[in-house]
Length: 420
Image (cartoon, rainbow, N blue to C red; front, side, top):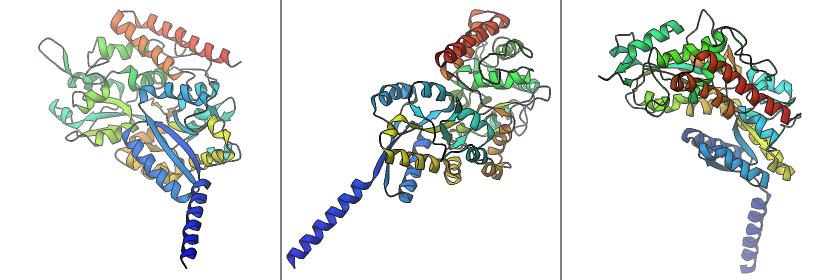
């Protein structure tokens, strides 16, 4: 009898070992953002429950070090099998050899068209192949502080709806000290944040221009529409109207959270953060129009498969399953609830069109554009430099705008020439 029990124990150990050994482990990377980390942990728990033969290791890094960590890991054959990246990084990740195309048998063109907003396909495509899938999408909207509106004698339930009203409201909401220094911004002015998107995809189009050619190879914002009037409008808010300036209280998010900024243009991803601020009574509305023209900027983070996953067919199979799971309607619902980002599936998004918070962002998606960045960091810097030239160096908007177009054209030319 004793020998029988010993054999049973040994058999149990062997079975347990076999089960453990049979698991395929993949590693998932994203940058650290508390609500995103918590939500991915929840999703991994459910994914592993549905796929008991797969284990997912979740690793996060500070945003500031993220790309450096990727660059030093994937080429060495270590690090993530599935990675979360900003869609604007896809060209750079592909040409650096970090990503592989999504398998066409699992992610067909028909699948993408039926499951995601149309701008998603354009954003994840590079040289005719698709490289990543989002859980959620983002757009911009105007956030306002209701208490500060009341203090300025404005109706706290009626935000500005046009650019003219935006300027008028911002002037009334700006507070200065005795020396004329701003102590409360009427409108945040942060081109390093969402400001460069507002300029490029919103103001340029509202003033009658187009930012780039359809193949994203040529800068057009200096050649179409109102040209430098766009930059003049933006910088006048800083230098003439004096309703805010870059770096006030460090950045726009800090100023709005501290109730030292009455209005800010920000993304739907900020909803979760603002909901945690006690005493902050805020509203959100579609971006102000100009001459009846509406425009918006759409963006998203997406999950792609790295070259590491190709080292083992089982890992690649597990990575495909995990990406599909992350982009399912069920994952999108949890992401919206926890993180506040919008469903990437248009049918699911329709369920929230009348929501007092999400509705403004979802309606904005109907006329939004997703910039095809060849180098998001460099292209953002071009727009930041243009603003700095006018605000800090006194260069005219005409000259700064022309130089910005020339600089950004060099970025585009360098990229496209490197892959031809």
